[in-house]
Image (cartoon, rainbow, N blue to C red; front, side, top):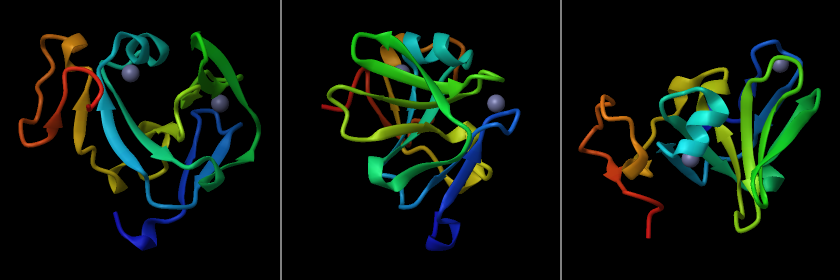
Length: 135
Ligand SMILES: [Zn+2]
Ligand SMILES: [Zn+2]
């Protein structure tokens, strides 16, 4: 991505929630964990990270669900689109790339939790690939 892509803007499916990311992502990764899969219905979930001060909701409210102790997954209370991830031990807010207005502005650079990957998903071997979290 380039500076002209900023701020990154995104929204849920129904449009009740709109958000903005003011700075370049702190990380870009594609998660294959079971929790992300169940929470979103996606085979894997591409995320960007943003410092909390660089993430703002500009319309509506994000509802949150505690998917495991201390971990909050954010979604639209009307349409259910998965939008965010935050919680204890995480300095950043995670934001789903798929909810960006221009998801092609961002290319994931890594895959995490490949030990939980669906067997039929093809993985780009040129990316940084990790069985769990990057160590
Ligand atoms: Zn919605
Ligand atoms: Zn995950």
